[in-house]
Image (tube, rainbow, N blue to C red):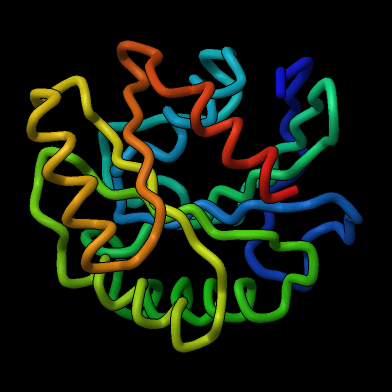
Length: 192
């Protein structure tokens, strides 16, 4: 699969205001500042398609991107990050409610992609998200971000841990080195 074009569709605060599209969709999940926006930009080879920030919690809306390929189009839904964010408890609870509703009711989600920062141990809220996905029978595979900061040996160990703990495929990724893009596109292609 080769990406031909990518465009931003819309930002929406909740499921009800998202456009009804009949294209396979992948919902991107992860802690605040795990690198979801950088992942989108690297995957589609556009440096400014998704807004990136060093401040956790900048993604506060559901951001939809339509990706055209040489085979089938698909949607990437960049969802607000979970975990640390400089927002009120009330706003975090609102995000959580909207996130759950989106994942449970959005009809065209083929799979979620949960992002884990390779530099750290798997965090408690990563485990909680994974348990919630399994409980609700929502498909998922994992992407291990920021792999350019650790050794290949460490990457292998982290992948083994994710496979054991989550029983998911885990694909390493580096936006800085632009590595593993083909493996991720191959996984997406196999799912659609």
